[in-house]
Image (cartoon, rainbow, N blue to C red):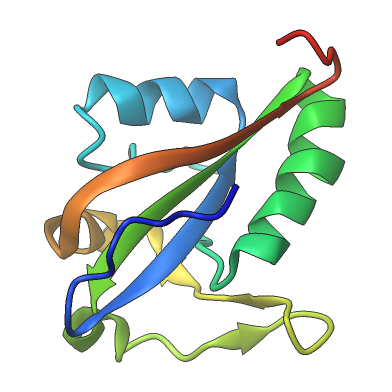
Length: 126
């Protein structure tokens, strides 16, 4: 299901495939911020399209944790201009690489809330 939330001006819509633990931390923040990265996670990787986020949620998060979510959020373009788009596969496999130490700045530049737009699981009943 596509995110039909109107995109605020001068922002870019980003997506993040997550597992249950990260999704729960975002929810606990009031859907306002991403949690701090773990020491083994020096970079935060939001992706630039829903297709790619869905692919990761289904093919990586579900097999590893039984559930995968796609979250969407809008960030001011002025902040994102510092981070070049990374093409990490095909033409639509696009992400940003935001250093963990800049995550609080990213959170301060989110416009509105982070939204859960899809859930995938091993069980069709969940």
